[in-house]
Figure (tube, helix red, strand yellow):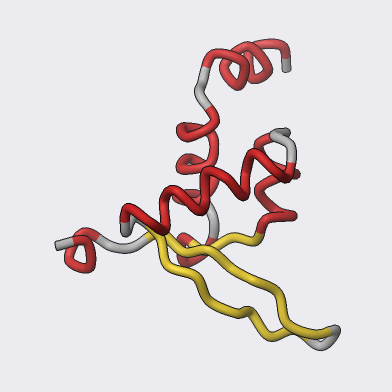
Length: 82
C-alpha cells in the first residue's frame, strides 16, 4: 500500500487526473469521483478541468441520474482532437 501512495505523491495533478479519466468507464468521470481517486482538492481539480476544456482535451456532458443530473467530464479520442 505504501508504494501506491509514493507514486501518487510523485505524479503531478495533471497526470493524476488524466490517469483517473483513462481508467474510468467510457473515459468519463465526475468531479466527486476525481476527488475520491486522486485525493486532490475540489478547486484544484476544477482548475485543471477548465484548462483541459480550453485546450480541447476534454468535453463536458451531463450525466442523468435518478437523483438529478451531474456534470461529467470526458476525454476526447484521438480522432476528435484533430
